[in-house]
Length: 109
Image 1: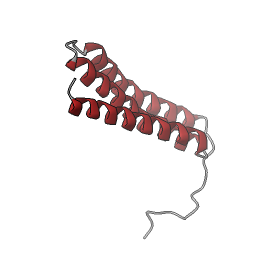
Image 2 (image 1 turned 45 degrees about the horizontal axis):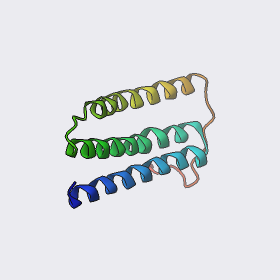
Image 3 (image 1 turned 90 degrees about the horizontal axis):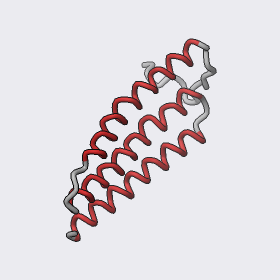
Image 4 (image 1 turned 135 degrees about the vertical axis):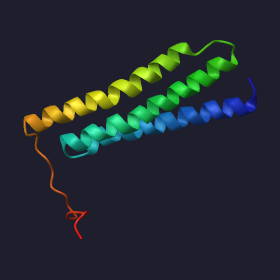
């Protein structure tokens, strides 16, 4: 494998790992359900997307077709936002507790 492709795969693996770590940290540290929902659905989806893209590039250089990785990416990008929307709607139905903003309302003029 060429050195440039190895560097690209390594960079995508590190980027994906960083996004997954940030998403997991957000899930652990953020104060209420809605904020905790945002961390994994956004950052972790980007993290898994980067990891799968690195896998696709790696296996395409070895001569194998990356159809499995393409399907994983497709299903991930379809199901993660849908499940997050359903969880948020369910939380609104049961009136899940929210944390008040600490710096006031940012959209007020």
